[in-house]
Amino acid sequence: MNRHRAPWVRGVALALAATLLSACANAPQRSPLAAWSPSPNHDARQAQVIVLHHTQMDSFDEALATLKSANDHGRVSAHYLIAEDGRIVQLVDERARAWHAGVGRWRGMGDLNDASIGIELDNDGSEPFAEAQIDALIRLLDDLCTRLAIPRTAVIAHADLAPTRKADPSAQFPWARLANAGFGEWPRADAPPAPEGFDPVLALALLGYDTTDLAASLAAFRRRFRGVDSRPPISTPAAGAVGIPPVVFDDEDRRLLFDLQQQRLGR
Ligand SMILES: [Zn+2]
Image 1 (cartoon, rainbow, N blue to C red):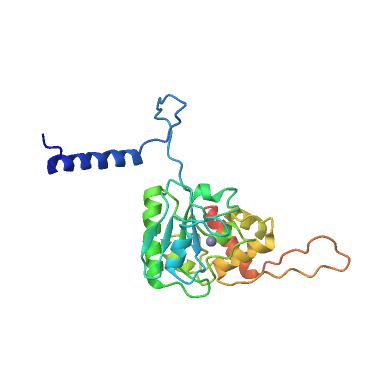
Image 2 (cartoon, rainbow, N blue to C red):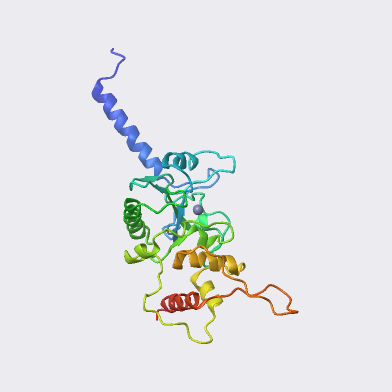
C-alpha cells in the first residue's frame, strides 16, 4: 500500500486541524482539578474605559519592539499601537490584561489594567499628533465602543489615572477633535462661570481624578482640558500658617469643572 496519503486526504486533515485549533482558541479556560458543569448565568468581564498613551519614542518600530519584549525596566504592552500614517496594530487580545496603566486610580477603580483597553500612539511626546493617526484612532474608538459596549465618554489620558507619575498623551493631543467625534468628556464652549460656593475639588473627584495629590491632579486636568502643561500655583501661606498650602484653582479651571460636573449630573 502507498504510504503517502493522497493530496486530498492531507487537505482534509489540515482543514480539520485548523478547525480544532480555532475551536481551542475559544474554549473555556478550565481547571484540571474540577468537573466542568457550565452555568449560563454569567457574562464576560468587560473593559469599562479606554486609556490613551503616547509612546515617547522616536519610531513606530522601536515602540512595537518595546511593547513585545522584556525590557530593562520591566515588560509593558498595550492592546493597540497606532502609527503616524494611521496603521493600527493589535498586540493583545481585548479579553486579556495588557500592561499599560501601572499604578493609578480612576473613578474609584484601583487596577486600571483590569478595567481598560490601552492604546499607544506613536509620538515622541513633543511633536504634534499626525492627522492620519487621529483619524485612525477615532475609527478604532468607534469600533471598540460599539463592539465592547464601552461608554463613548469613557476615553481618558494615562495621566488622568496616574497624575503623579505620567504626563501622556502630551498637551498637544487634540481632545477637542475627539470630543467633536463623540469621544471623551468635554466642556461646552458657552459654559457660564462657576457660581459662588462651587467646590472644584469635589468636581475633580466626581470626574474620576484621585485628588490625594491635588496639584498633580489639577495639572493633569489642565493638560487634558486646557492644553497646557503647568503645575497649578500653590497659594502663599499666611504668616504662621501650618500644613500644606492649598492649591489655587483659577476662574477657567472652575468654569470648566463646573460645566463638566453639570454634564456628569445630566444638567
Ligand atoms: Zn502612558
